[in-house]
Picture 1 (cartoon, rainbow, N blue to C red):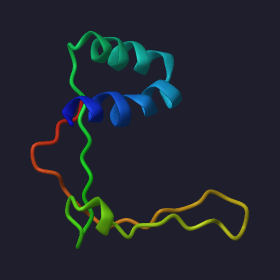
Picture 2 (picture 1 turned 45 degrees about the horizontal axis):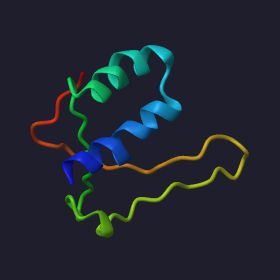
Picture 3 (picture 1 turned 180 degrees about the horizontal axis):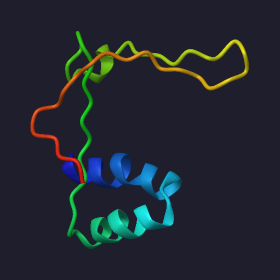
Length: 81
């Protein structure tokens, strides 16, 4: 499962949407096995139960950006690189 998180869930968004600098900084070491990606999902009242997540985006009625209502959650042990 850990390999699937790395290869199928965490790496693809960086590969598709990341800047060239982000790809160089994160993807190259991840592909070499020097950096391990993780995925932390949490939401109040759902915890890590992905099926229980209820957050949805709201499309703008004025043609602006969509919004995602959010609540404060913390993931223990998470690191920012």
